[in-house]
Length: 382
Image 1 (tube, rainbow, N blue to C red):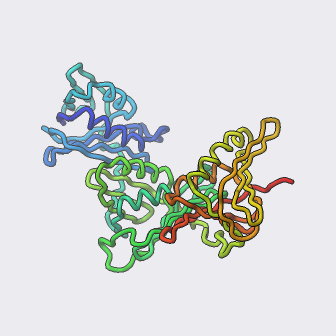
Image 2: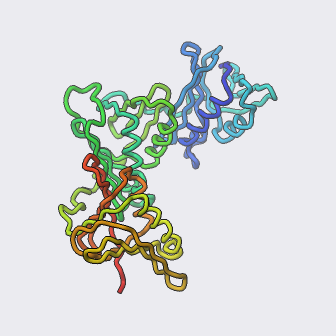
Image 3: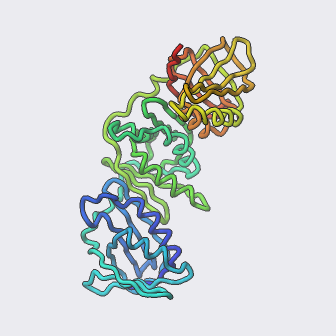
């Protein structure tokens, strides 16, 4: 294998695929990146795969001889990142050899690789359900829900995001048991290879979806993403990148039954002012248990946000608000509330609740939006 490529493109590609390289590999080759050169297409492809998450990207290169080999991801990445970004890199491997030689304007390096035959094949599913998703819709769906998934591996399914496709609508949902984020978008995708309406429900690991969101957010020009799902594997495919992931097995909780059908109280608040006030009071709340209290009197046009931390101090902020129903007091983990408010794009939000101990709903004041953010209150000790 022999080729010449750009240092900057190679470095960017390595940084991307290394996110799918196992930190504690069960086999030595899983600590490596697969490098494949194709003289016919004039492209260099890099792949990282830890058996759960796979990332593959490719870019143009001057390929003299086709071939494939794997190199240690960390060492390879550190060498390439320190080379001059204006210097082309000559990459060569002699036939039947695992010794890779790298040449740049400043010097030469040799690295011991492993044969590409040892690298596990990326599960490129291109059968089963096929969907084409608009990039901006996928980004919005992930940003609106990923933050609410659990980081506790013992909770298994709750460490993922649930995706539900029905006809041409897409619903994403995530919960960690304390809060729930749900976004429903009609007309989210086009059916590309199935004449019948698609009905599909899967749960994907949040880690995989974070890498997908990170990747597509960097694109200068948005293109639609082809999505394939079959036999416990999913593939997100674009012109130059591939992300594969396993699905999480099991039945996701019926989250819709957690959302109350009606509410006796509703508070309308300016979202940005609410966030700013919460962040100021959170300075105190963060010192102990992150708990803040919201209080509003009957017929009042003010909501009071307060925190009282024993042996530390207390603080409060007052904001204009529109109350429907009777006054109330309710307490929340301020970090949960801020996470949800920052994922809403509307200028004003509604806080709807029934009692200080029952689920509260934050949602945008916008009939066109279908975002619901449920937070379980913290019991107030009196």
